[in-house]
Length: 589
Image 1 (cartoon, rainbow, N blue to C red):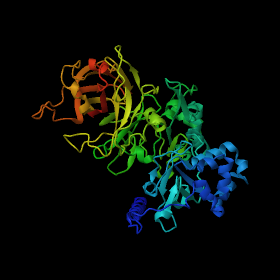
Image 2 (spheres, rainbow, N blue to C red):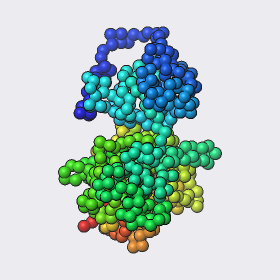
Image 3 (cartoon, rainbow, N blue to C red):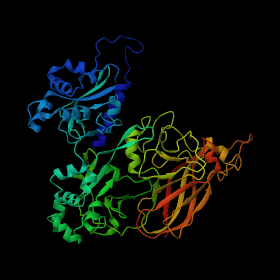
Image 4 (cartoon, one colour):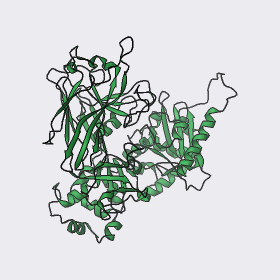
């Protein structure tokens, strides 16, 4: 029903935008259009209280700047009155200046959001001034007539009027006030009175301190400071689920797990259980149900804060989505769909219908390891991505935005620059690159696309290397394949000469004693067919190379992989780089 509402709205928007204007091609001077704050002042019966709020927050003039491009979600006077009653105050001053400033920033986006963009629904591309994400939702149960009347912000604030055009942006009128995201994911869990036992377990084990961190500040080589958000997802076990298993308190849980008293020890049973319910990254339920290749994959592995333990989410024959289905009836569980997607300042809470004990009995399956798919990268791109980059989302643009990661001090990557140095790469030395949705990247097969619409670019000089941890691997035998991208700007590396050995790389898994290092010339191994003028027929494409026919994974854990650039051209040419899409692990029966 919600999808039907969304489709109907998009049809209406398309019709509005396509109507023939009787004054088309004529030019008019606009005299009555005002900036946002001035516009609100013309409607005191609706917005006099919100104007007080903006002035108290010292934001009125900022919102009124003629050169700004803004979108304001403005609550009505009635909405503010209800909000004051909820907060048990009678005026804006009683809320305090710090909170009120957060309130205004949470309702303000530093860009214009058109009706067409807004009506698509889902998370808005641009964050608020408070660096939070807003979401447009559609309420199929709304008692109003539906369509535009069924649109809500974050599922809590009904949108009464849409896309009022002002001289410096747009105003969307709300019947309710959106509550600023000020609580951490742990604070929300602690205060919701649904997860008291799990909240106590997280507190005893010390994980609550980690979950309360909103952001880290890093110092870049030029001395500037950048804020990088932390994000988490808690897989919440409600108290009623614990109680159905005879667990009425955290002490009961300790007894059931056989945990000792050193709860902050990472090997303690209570600590491991609590950590197993933490995912590093912010994920809605729909994200957790999304597999790497929608037309093929029916499951995905998710790493947790618990060392060497993972969760397998799968869609089974009954079309339901399960967590750890392989473990049997005592291990598997499902999402409590009616009680999910609780958004907080630094993540989400998703409630479950079962205890979700740590499961070791998972069956091997196809694993796509995207070398850029790390929460640290997602958080960094979310805070510092260039040119409108959105993590794992292709962009409709003339060029691919590329964000340098080399100096971002991300924990997911360890690297070393080659002893002969590295050139100032035209494509980034260790960079996250977003691909274009309007481009064809494979002149052999136009249907081939990148796994998540992105690449990891590596250009660290001759003998330079980068290493990273794999997802938690399930024991078994696998065929291992590397998928990489080639562009015509690297054609000089396809033959031996000009200081190049064909784009050779070395790949090794140092923690696997029985797995040796392999070398492979990525570019000289490409098809060498040419046209009548000697030009290569293959000028761009995605290519696969088998790294190992058989690799045996002995234990359920993460494994380190190191890629070394073993081509001298890596220290000579600004165009030299490798661009990796993913590593594929295919089970061998």
